[in-house]
Length: 320
Image (cartoon, rainbow, N blue to C red):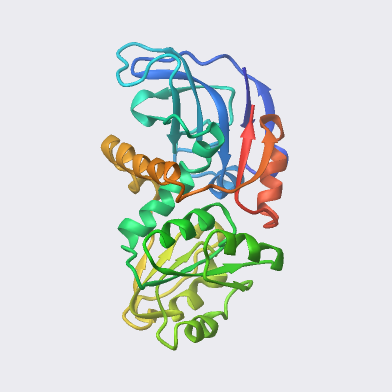
């Protein structure tokens, strides 16, 4: 079987299309044939510099959907032939994967492979943001950075199901319509900081209830200044840089939250519950992932280069 492997960390050029031994599922594992893998900024960060538990040499990728083709011993809950999806499992840029069965969720009928692949990591992230990081309520105002990106488009749609107002920030004029089509009430074309004045204008001087900020160091301070007293700054942009600050620098008695990926679904039960709620939104027509690009698996390096150029919209997928 083939996979995208790196032997060292660096730019997209370190990503190699390799023929590797077919994995054998061990006890409690299922062998899954890939249907689609998602591409995430997290993947580019791991490729560039690694992360705890994710150091070269390794096969890249953290999420996907596929079909179970074999089982190891002592596997419950999935069977050969099941369509399944997974979240935060290393090695997803591969034609075949051996995955712990407890990490798999069944994909309901009526949801296509590409749709399921597009809502695992980013959909779970967005769902955690509106339910745990800050419980979005009717009448709230939420600011969504990168509102035409994968997380931003899902987050905008989920926020609108809760009756709140969305102010989206995008980097280019051509992304405005995409953010509006997802339900954003206002869309600002903005790069970097300095946008807090416009947020206050749109909220009649009060500020937003929550800012979902994946912009890194350039947007960190302005995101905080755009909040009302006791607002929540949900900062998930360390891959774009982490600023130094003192707690006494936080304005308006705001709360700073750094949602950690593996805390979104700390247990098997949480994974099943959260993905079930996301799948229900899709089946009800309230959540539609935007597929911004499909790439052959062997061209994953091109997908990484495109994502890092910040010219893409929606979710990028790799198809074997």
